[in-house]
Image (cartoon, rainbow, N blue to C red; front, side, top):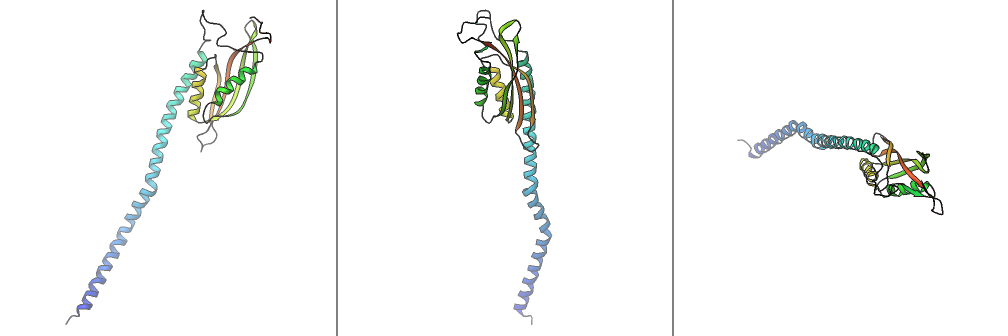
Length: 198
């Protein structure tokens, strides 16, 4: 006569063995699923975001290049009825120009001004008390900061021309840009008595 307890024990043992076999067979599948969601999916999403950012930056760079070219070609803004010196910096020292442009740049968020200086001064045509001045800035910021710099220069009430602009990354792992900017403008030198004439 078959012992019922032994029979149950054998059946349970066989079931456990079958379960273990199924688990071992499915283990590679579960590991693959885990790796897929843990590593491959985030990597793919990161790559997709990077591609989107890259496309956006490329479009912005093209827009900025076109804007720079238009700024370079833009003539001095004046009409016959306007004050001819409305768009020219005036003062007793050319460094007034440097100070005013520096104030504009300092208002731009996330922009770091590393250095700035007047690199060139020369008379404007035959006008003795009008000087053509070039100011060089070494800046740091991101792509958005660069856009704001160009917008501020474009809408500034004085005539500013971008003579030189170079942009490079600080390093391959950073989004921070090193911006070398040279601006040309005109400065009307006034005597302290304010009686000088062109």
